[in-house]
Image (tube, rainbow, N blue to C red; front, side, top):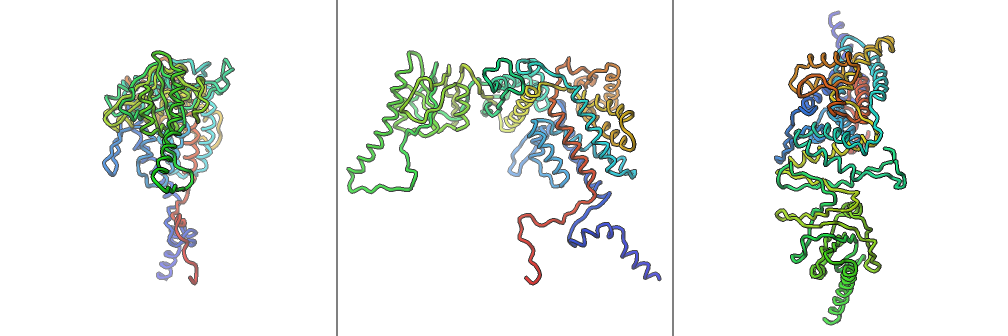
Length: 570
């Protein structure tokens, strides 16, 4: 009887029964089921949260990433960290991909997305360990999300004319940049970022005198971000024009001209190869010399046409600049140099488009029908050399719709850090202009949303879904908590002060990261982007809900890209 009982217990082992369906299909499958799957997923989310937790806010710390070849990158931008780190856990990798998608869509909110997702799962775990079904928590999360999104619509502050409200845009850019860079450097870059966005923003219909934010066309690709490993980061500036990372290729060519006519062209001033494979057969040397002479004559004719055009257009104290997308051979460069023309060859295609928007004019594809109206204008064109690298500056343009942010720094990782911050700052300013609204920052919205959810839980939700609403409200407070923690203040004391101040004032109250006291974001100029908040709430709730409803993690899929296993008899 004892042997029978032992055999029964072995055959009816609960763990074996739990994994039986997958094991029957694939005996080699690795399975984590039921409560173990939830514990593994929540642990991964909390682990990723702990990594990025210390980076949130203007007082957050930095991370140093070291590559296999010794490359160094210092940053606290969540998008950069998640993109550079090697994440092997599948759940953590999924959260990282969702957070980087948040940055791709809105330009910010990566760290907040990771923190909120991890906190939602952490709060849900408290109730799930007591036997509550994950579907109940998920229903509560969905109800809470809808309520918070409705609150966001009433909580945001609409702006009548955001493009021309320079003070507001500067505050938005400063709030964004201070979370990525040192305060002194962030404050210096703020005006440059705002000026760059205002430079490239224009109404789609030029005849509309009062365009709405949705009628504006803001192409941030027309803001060239050029870097020079030179001087210090505080020498970064905005150039209302274009900076090209190449210069002249002739020693006698002028390095600076004023009152310049800019000719943008895509014409070959060199010997051209045939489009098909071909060869020329000569019976004697004279025939070869005739062919070379005819090719030279063809090229020189185009150069002389440009020179004659320059003489007819330029008056005294006026210069002439050629920016060509194709090549210019040495003999042609010599002819241009003798005429005092700056000629740049093999310009990048993206610079050609930016040059047209910055200086005006239209691109020329032939030298036969040259017209004065096709020329652009720049007040000054000059060349600057740094070692073996040359940079050409096109400045003092009249109606610039393209500009350049010239980033300087002593080393590569400083330049990379500034570049990442500037891109986020440009997106933040663009979002405010397009949305036409802002949200008070400093954790003000999260405190107000948590308070509103508690009232919603008592009055608007019935049954066990209240538990999910409660968990959502507690999870939202992760933002002011981490801001206080990263600023060196007591978390509970700061949170209690914020909640009491919000109840007493009935207005948006955020955390002052310098003093740890409550403050009014409207007075301090601390603004967050509306679309970032909205997208973050959507993505985090959906992702947390999906992870909660996972009850089995299986490594039993077919090998991706591998050959199929041989069938029977093969």
